[in-house]
Image (cartoon, rainbow over all chains, first blue to last red; front, side):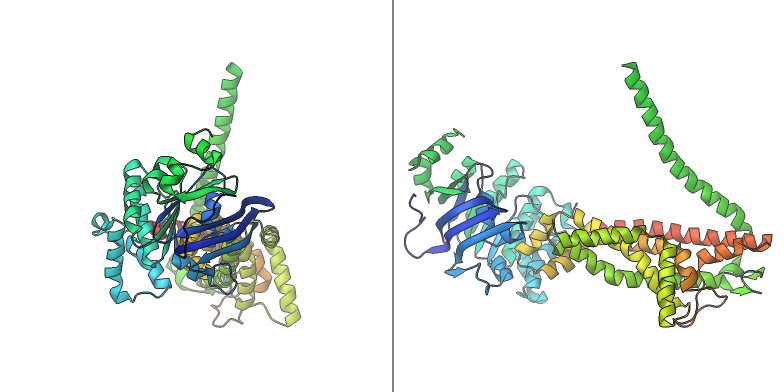
Length: 259
Length: 283
C-alpha cells in the first residue's frame, strides 16, 4: 500500500477511513484511506468506471440515493463521521456542495434558483435576498449576463450559463466543500474555461474536490491528485509530485496514456 | 427491391389511414351530435330544469344534469386528487426505483383502471345499501372518485417517473429534505403533466354513466345537499334517448352536445394550462 495521506498533520478537511462501497455485491471502492486538505483543489483521476464518482459521492452522502449501494467505513468532515446516524444529512449536504456533470437548474426563475437554498435553510431574510443573490451570481461570473432578466426561467440560459447558475446556487447555501463531478465536461470550451477560472478563484475560501478524466484539466487545476484504478487508491499526493515523479508503475502507465 | 417498396407503401397507407380514421371519427361524432342536438338547443336548456319530467317532458332544460354532472365530477376529482397526488409522489419519488411494493401498487391501479364502470357502480351501490345510504350526490362523488383514482394516479406516476432524477438530486445536493424536494421541485417541474392528469380524470368522471346510475340516481331538481340525488349529463342522454318521443330524443342529443363541448373545453383548457404552467419546467 502506498502512503495514504495527502498531507501530514491535522489540516485535513475530509478524512476517509477504511471506506468500502459496493453496488449490490459488486465492490466499487476497496478500503480507501485518504486525507483531503483544506482550501486546495484536489482532483480525482482515473479511467472510466474506476470509482471516481463513487468516491466523490461518498462525501455528500449521495451514494445513499443509489439503489443497492452498500457503504462501510468512515468519512470524517472536520473530524465528525458524516455517516454517523446522529448526523443530519441535509446539514452535510449544505456544508458539502455539489456541481454536477450536467447543469440542472431548478424549475424556477434565475433569481429563485439562487434564493432557493437560502430559503429552505432559512439563512437570509427576504430583505437581504436581493443583495445575496447578486453577490453569488457575481462570484459565479454570471451577474452581468443576467442582471436584466433575473425573473425569467433559468432554462432560457445557455448550457454554460446554466452551469455557472448551478455554481451560484450551490455557493449560496454557504458550503465549505465544493464537489465537482466533471463539471465542465458537458460545456463548450469557452464555458469550460469559465468554470475552471471560477474554481481557481474559489479555492481561496473552499475545499474543492473534482473528478475528471481529462488529464490536461487535472494538470491545470490540481494542487493534489488522487489516482484511482479499479476501486483502489493507487497513488495520491501533491500534483507536481504525482504528475512528474509518480511512485507507482500504474500511475506512470496511466499518465503516459498506456490505458 | 420492388417488394420492399410495396411493403413501404402499404404500411404507410395503413398508418396514415388509421390516423385519419381517428380524426375522421371525432369529426363525424361532432357532426352527428351537432346536427341532431343543435335544433333542440336553446337558452332554456342551460337555464331551466326539466318541466313535466325528464323522461316525458318536452319543456324546460337540462340545468339539473349540467349542474349535477359538474358537482359529481368536480367532487369526485377533488376527492381522487387528495389520494392520487400523495400516492403518485410516493411512487415516483419516495420509493426506490425497483421497489416490490411500488410494483404491487401499480399493478393494483392498472387492474382498477380496467374494471368496467358498471362494476364500480354496483360495488358502490352494495356498500351504500349495507350502510343504509340512498342514491345521492355523496354516493356518486365517492364512486366517481374511486373510478378516477387509478387513472389520475397512473397518469401522474408516469409523468413523475419521466422526470430526470438529476433534478431531484440538484435540490437534495443543496440540503433540501425529501419532502421539500418533492413539494418544491417535483410538483413544480411536473405541474403541466399533473394538470393534464387531473383533467383527464375529470373528463373520464364527467362522461361516465354507469357508475352514477345506481349511486347518484337521477332527479329533475338541482341537489342542495350531499344527501340528495343528483342528475348527470350522461344519464340525461341515456334516459331521453330511451323515450318514444322524438322531441325528447332530440333533447337527449342536445344534452350529448353539451357534454361533448364540455369535454372539448376541458381538453383545450388542459393544453392551454399545461403550456402556461410549463414555463419554468426543465426540458
